[in-house]
Length: 265
Ligand SMILES: NC(=O)c1ccc[n+]([C@@H]2O[C@H](COP(=O)([O-])OP(=O)(O)OC[C@H]3O[C@@H](n4cnc5c(N)ncnc54)[C@H](O)[C@@H]3O)[C@@H](O)[C@H]2O)c1
Image (tube, rainbow, N blue to C red; front, side):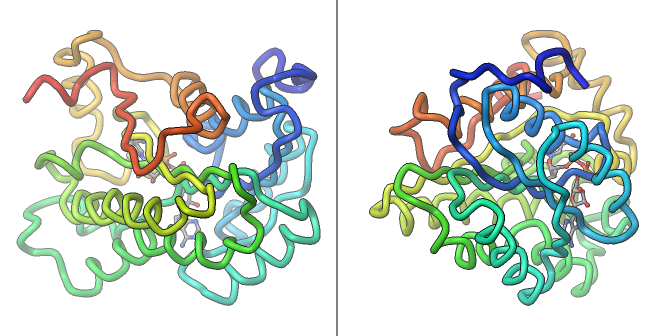
C-alpha cells in the first residue's frame, strides 16, 4: 500500500464522493492503481470481484483500502449485475462514480491471425469487454446522480492494428463507440462517460496477449517520453476524469500512454 492511502486527505478532490470499481484481480491491476488514487483523494470505494478464483485476493486488497468487503459480479450475467446494483444501493445509496476496468478474450484469439477469430471468441470478447459497460450503466442508472461520472479502460489497438491484439482491438473499438453513445444518452442527466487509453502495462490480462513483453519494449523505445506508463499515472488521470476538474469532459478517450499514439509507430 502506498503511503497516504490509508489516511486520505480530508479535503481531497473526491472527498465525499462514493462509487464502485470493477476489475481488480490483483495488485498489478489497473483498477487497483485507480482504487488507490481515488481513496487517497478522499473517495469511498467499493470493489467487485469476478469469481471465487480471485475472491480472497480482492478481499485482502479491499481490506487495505479500509473500506467495504468486495461484492461479486461476473459481468456476463444480467442477474449478477442486477444483484450488484442492489447491494451497492444498500451499501452506498448512490454512485458518484463507476469505474469499468474489465476485459477478456479467449487466449487462442490473442495470437495468430485476426482472420481466424471464431464466432464464439468474438462473441465472448465483445460481451465481456464492451457490452458489459452498457449493461452496467443501464442497471446502475437509478443510482447515478447528476454530476456522476463513468470511466472505462481502452487501448490504442482500437484505433490501429497492433500485433496479436486481434479481437480485443475490435472489442475496444466497440467500447470507445459505446462511450460516445452512452455519453450522449446520459449527458442530459448530468452524467459523464469517458475512457482512458492506457499504454501497455504488465498485468494479468496483458500477459494473455502473445508477444506482450515485446510490445512493452517497443512502446518504451518509440513513445515520445521514451518510457512506459505507470499505474500511478492512470490513477491520477482517473481522479481528474471522475472529479469536477473534468466537469465539461464527456465522450472522450484520454490517452495516457507517454505519447505513443501520436508517433504512427
Ligand atoms: N494492461 C494493459 O496493457 C492495458 C492497456 C490498456 C488498457 N487495458 C485495459 O485495462 C482494463 C484492466 O485490465 P488490466 O490490464 O488491469 O488486467 P487485469 O487482468 O488486472 O484486469 C482485468 C479484469 O477483468 C476482470 N474480468 C474479466 N472477465 C470478467 C467478467 N466476466 N466479469 C467481471 N470481471 C471480469 C478480471 O477479473 C480482472 O479483474 C482492461 O479493460 C484492459 O483491456 C490494459
